[in-house]
Image (cartoon, rainbow, N blue to C red):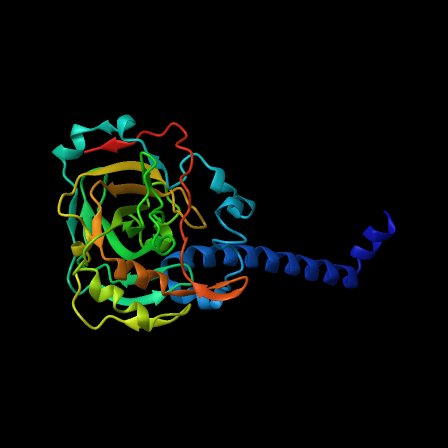
Length: 309
């Protein structure tokens, strides 16, 4: 028996070994807790105040470096993608079983500046989507957007034959086969996201009640309650044709858990409404600045099938 083994056999050595094991356990629990915080932040902006925000961003530690902390960023079903319309397969089954969207007009609870976008938090009661590419019923949990620079035509995450739009709205839903969004978020069929392109044009009357609230949440963690009835279905295009494919979250933790439903027709919003998005503020290396370019570029398709109605 060497000296180390003799020491560990003593009461003092045993106490030291237990202490070290406790220290290791604390580190492991911290890692697990850190992962849960990443997951929670995506859906619950209030958590971001407790978690810190040094893990990722859209500038110095932007999308081209996310793989350093989130290796899945180089996975097989990452989003967004460039939708090549000539390669999309028209699937009659999608039309035979139409996508059903049913939201209530009192489901929207609050608007928060998350430091990376705005986020409208939704009470999922009375909100359901089903049919189309979905095998289950999904409930709406939140919606947010991604956008580019003032006056620019880029900002959408998905592109269509290489063409970009100034912004893209994401309505995030979770699969009711799971007990809650926290359980669903990393499952292959856990989430369904409806993507809607915003094009520059006339004012969108449906978006106005939400965009008018942005002035009340200029900085990260600012929050304002929604005190009026609001049905998010007003943000969908009149024609509901879409592309669909299996993908991921477009922000860390980038879980490959999303069935994407990208509407073909854009929705017009005014230049003033697009400017309201950019009047939200976030932290940059040079200090507080206007929020813009909060989008991830298209990722490799990796042989995935894009289906079309």
